[in-house]
Length: 224
Image 1 (cartoon, rainbow, N blue to C red):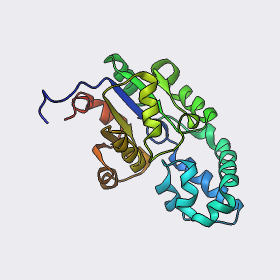
Image 2: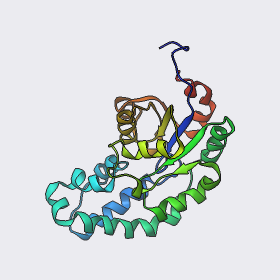
Image 3: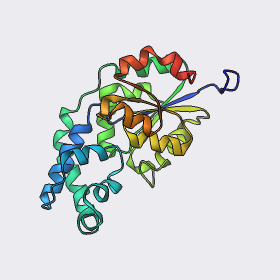
């Protein structure tokens, strides 16, 4: 594709958990504790690899169809209780707010695409000044199917009337969902996924940090 063929980006869609706030390992611990309530003990690394997909899909992915059938809804309720206790420990990543400022200063629409529960998303917004900086945000209530389905990203785009967008995420599930929604993805390693995993899932470029991404923002927004 030549420079002339590229359409101007008007929207940046940010994943929140693991991308802007350092929460992935808290999610993994909360799921581990929830599973233990029902005498199910998946390896933590398996749980971590599933973080980023929706909780409606995670239980079966990690523990199998039988556990989902017998305990799925109870496990999700238990996860909420466990994560609520860890929520005060979640912190924003260095560079999160400056990156969002930079995007807004360029006149772009900014939407935060989270599949988290409303109370969790509200907490995150406070950590990154999201209410002031974002044009819109989503919660679990905004999508029928969670990532890797594209519903949440499509809803995020619709909320701001975006035409041409890029997705910023941290997980393989972000990249897969964005691809299904027709968006290119740029990833940061803040979620604990490797460069190879993220690229294999479809990320165009992978950054070690949000600061590094911000330094490269011009090139990213021009699709280079």
